[in-house]
Amino acid sequence: MRAPRVFMVLLALALLAWATPARAGARLECPAEVGQGLPFFVRVVADEAPGAVDLEFGSVRARVEPREGGGGWEALTLLGTNLEAAPGPVRLVARLAGPGGPLVLEREVRVVDRSFPEQRLSVAREMVHLTPEARARHEAERAEVRRVLADVSRPRAWGGEFVRPVPGAVSSAFGLRRFFNGEPRAPHRGVDLRGPEGQPVLAMAAGTVVLAAQHYFAGGSVYVDHGQGLVSMYFHLSELLVRPGDALAAGDVLGRVGSTGRVTGPHLHFGLAVYGELVDPMPLVTGSLRPE
Image (cartoon, rainbow, N blue to C red; front, top):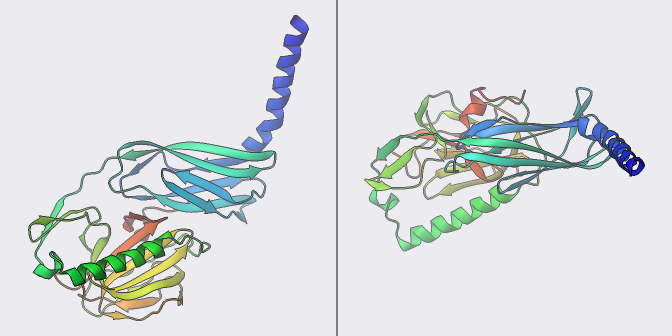
């Protein structure tokens, strides 16, 4: 009985030794904790060229193309947590083809609770209680925006630096619980930046304009797809200086600050979607969140 047992142990050790190099040649990097409504970087590093890296985080499914550099291969992307996600652990899974065959890497990201203040604003009555015609227009615009945010087919155009679209201070932060004319509405899923009428608005990163239109609530609006699920939004513009299909570099002027749509004065509403999830863009443009 002893010989078969010894043989099985040796066989198990041999199989373990064969599998270890593939697993040691790749790693998944991400933060241990992320606050509600915040973006975060995910990086898969491999010694040898993997195939496309498939990521799974909650309901998000993302395919990331690896790039060569630094003596190895890296698949870098941004993910984000929902503003109203329940605090607690969320499994992050990366699937890739390693040197020894398919490889699955897993980490746990804990979503951390954040508190958000209230904001009460007075606006025109028709911006709170919509006519049937205005509601139909708004629903059509929402469907168009959902289509734009659902398209994650473009390759990554953004790098490690992001541009603040206007220099003004934040007047309304991300996540505010908003009341219009005393009535509760959805939380603020962007940031309002101060700026005078006509001030140039800059693209936060390289990308392609995928939507430029006048919307009922957002007024003059521009959406820029930066690739790999990252889309930035610029609302209430007085003038649109780009059209769908235009290619932009980081810092290019795309419009001018205005007071169109549902506003109380001129400012820029600056928003960011990561694989369709609306997150706070400020950590990226202030440099507090970096891919390094």
